[in-house]
Structures are given as structure tokens and as C-alpha cells.
Image (cartoon, rainbow, N blue to C red):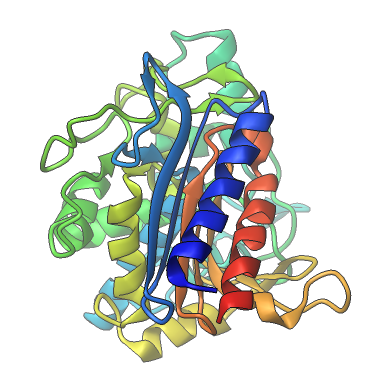
Amino acid sequence: MKKEEIETSIENEFRKKVQKNSKINNAYLLVHSDKLDLHLNAAEGRTGDMDADPRQPNYMASVGKLFTSTLISMLYEEGELSFEDKISEYLDDDLLDGLHVYKGDDHTDKIKIKHLLNHTSGLPDSFWHLLEKFLEDPELKMSPRKAIEWGKKNRKPHFPPGKKFYYTDTNYYLLGFIIEEITGMPFHEALKERIFEPLEMDHSYMLHVSEPMEDPGVPIADFYLKGEKMTDLKVFTDTGSYAGIDYAGGGVVAPMEDLLKFMKSLVNHEMIEKETLDIMMNDKAKFGLGIDYGYGIWMLKKIPVLMPGKFRSWGVVGVTGAFMFYHPKTDSYLIGNFNDTHFQRKGVRYMLKFLDKLIKAD
């Protein structure tokens, strides 16, 4: 199959899926492969009063966790921290006080940076509970730090550090604080200075917190919580918005082309060295059936019958149906977003269907 035929086939299937599903308001897809000499950047649906445009920045939810783990890994390479360090070396006593009390025993001083990165700290999650409170009371004041304090009082740890896997944004809030402590700047500024600027991700920023270096000329794509528009929700937080409980757990907003720059920089070891990326991928925990989780990285592995080995790839997923993956065999990047929490799992399923077309063409 020729390059043009592959691109047309993927694009047509993508557009049909969006058009046939009434729950999808807008969706975005970028597929790139140097090996197959292929580049597709498509958008479908409506956002605001305009047709979806491929240039639009997208709120990528937990896709942002890979940016956070990359910042931590850069600091590791600079000798500013070790993955084995206890978080108590970087965080203040008030924040740490009673952070991880499990069955009457305080395990806070046993939490290491690596436990935050691969979600094995055992800490509870507050994000969804607080989001529901925001929707009920838009004048509720919150911040990442207050979210952790709320979690101490209202949620319980699940197990001692290092024993199991439990996905929680709390881990990435704490990583954000560590980044701020070491760099001496707010998280969004560290993100801009260390990733966005060097990679010329000119149209990328943090939701409701910062601005892109250049105006993309089009608005952010609308995103939804189970059909309810969330784009302009700016609750009264210390940071001035919904981003107060998103923060280092997933506040990145970027167009597909900027995200491609970031993923290519990781694959080509431009931002961090190969040895460091190997640690990020190999120090992993079992997320679920066919999925391991490293340092902000999802790794799809073979499952007999359910997941053929041909789909082995790595990347990251966001709750809005966002995904950003690299498939080594075809040297392909698949990045997209369905912009609704209805598609948290469906987004990856759709991605695999598009990937299957690339594999067959290889």
C-alpha cells in the first residue's frame, strides 16, 4: 500500500468514527512515521463556533505526567537528585506530616522519588473527589498543596510504599513540588524553560496558568467531562483555575505537532540519555492487563489472543481520550485526543486500530 493510500485509509476511518459517534464533539489525530514516509495531522468535529482545526492546542490531561517525569529525569542527569532519594529530603515538614499513615504506622519517610514516578507510593487520590466538589461549588478554593492536605484528612493510603501499584495524581503533585524546590521556579516556568523553549514547542502552555510563547491563531479545543463542557471552567483556586488540582499531574496544553516534537526528542535521546530512558521504562509496575507503568510511561505488552505482540509500544494516556505513543517496529508516532472522558479507554482502542494499518503497511 502506498503512503498516500495509508494516510487516506487512516484519515477516513478516523473521520467516520467521529462522525458516527454522537458523544464525540471534536477529535484530533496525528500519525507520523519516518520509516513509512508518512505524516497525517487531522481534526474532525466542532469546537466552539468553528470546525475543529489541526493547529488547535489540546488539553492532554495525564499525558502531562510524561513531561513531569521527564523534568525529574533531567534533574537526575544533572546530579540534582536520585530516583532512590527519599522525598523527605526535598519537601517541608508541614506537607509531609501525616502524609502516609497506613494501619496506624507512618510510612512517609519510606517514600522515594521512584515510588511517586511509578505510582507505587500507596498514597491516595483526591483529584476526582475534588473535581466533583468544584462542579457542585464553583467558589471552592483549592491548590495542589491544599489538595494533598484534603487527601490527608479525607482519604487513606492503600499500602506501604513500594508494595503495589495505585495510580494517583497525588504522586505527581509531590513531584511538581520537588521540581519547584530544586529549580527555584514555579512548575509551569520549569516546563517552559527546560522543555517547551529548547524544543520550540511555541504553542504549548499550562492550562489556565501560563500562555504559549506564540499565539497559535486558533483557540484551545473544547474538552468535556462526560458530555459537560469543561474548557472554560475556572474555579476560584489559589492558581486561579481548575488547573489548581491538575498541576504536574496533567495540565499541559499543546497542538499535535508540538507533542510530536516532544516524543521525538525522547525517542532520539535529545532531552534525556538512553540510559535514563531505560531506567524510566524498566523500573515498572503492573498497571493492568497488558500494561506496565514506568516513570510516567505506559508500556503495552503482549497478551495471548487479547494483545498481539505486534502492538508493543510505549507512551502515555489522558482521561479525555488523549494518547501519545511510539511504536518502535514501524518507527511510528500516534498522538491524538477525543476530548471527552467517555473515551478514556476507547481512545487507546481507536489508536490501536490506526496502528494496525501501519503495521500491515510496514
